Length: 231
Image 1 (cartoon, one colour):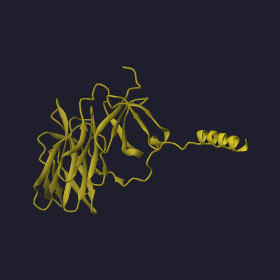
Image 2: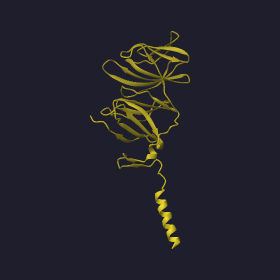
Image 3: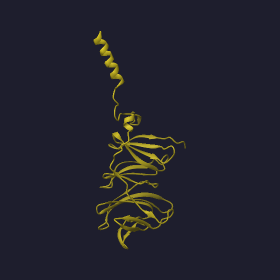
Image 4: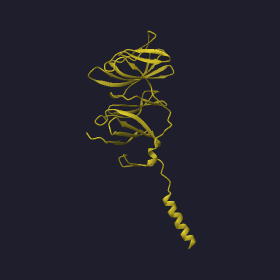
């Protein structure tokens, strides 16, 4: 009798103390998320990420002179992307249209630029990697649209977002590890991204309350789009 009672008690205790299924994600047939366990949404606090260098603008509303503090020197950038150091041409971004917003990421002797351009009617975004020794553009990649948020750099990748677009760009070759376009009906601009365990990446919109796009960073699959605002 004691053996039976002990067995029953152990069974009940085991049912009550089942450990959390860390990072469990329940997926529907179409690969969308139906549930995410609390442990899966534990933010990764320690992530080796950096932001590129931003510039100072002499005028906030129209294309005008821009300045960058780099290696204890002040660089001057023209509206079409000619970069001068000590009065001499350092390198040329070669933007066809006026640059409205720009970020710089130095990597050894190269400079990676992320910028928004506009001709007054049409606007978009671009990224280029330039060898500052000879001015050669090593690669160039379109970033879909305008309203670009500051890129987040993690290792050899940049996490990018513009109006209707999120993507992960390989900084070595200028190719996308993954990207999602045509989101502009709901997502005008983003903040983020935020990283979670199980390689989840969450891009939140700037709307209040925020809409969001969740992606599996390992395989580049779109897991969930959450729409919270009314249109």
